[in-house]
Image 1 (spheres, rainbow, N blue to C red):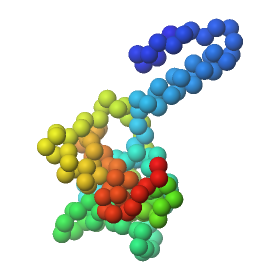
Image 2: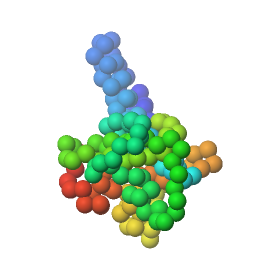
Image 3: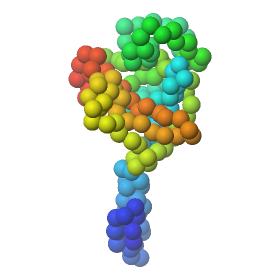
Image 4: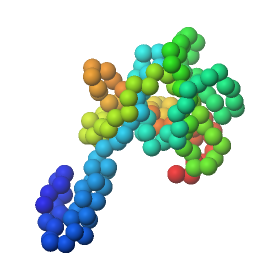
Length: 163
């Protein structure tokens, strides 16, 4: 039996073989896909690995040393940025000090295939990786910039993250 290009033996009469095959199929699918939380800030679309997010909650005006505005983290500069429906994304960081980022306009949580993701040219990659941006995903006529909040946290001096 073939699943996504890999060959698995056909299950025999026992249910254990069928269960193992199903498990192998699910694991193969998981390796070939990525669940992304998609949001936008100031008209720019971003996607983050949903597994990096521990919690999403509505922003209600709170402040804290562990709470950062997304546009400030990403270096939007002096451009005035308005948030229409701000939410706080709490990033998993292995028990190190909390890292919470205020994002805007959550669009979707969806599964994408790795093959649909485009990487940046070698010339741009080092700069973008320092900003936590690692790829682009074309979707519905838009380009979604893919972020790694854990990398961004480390680049801002957040310490070591235990994955």
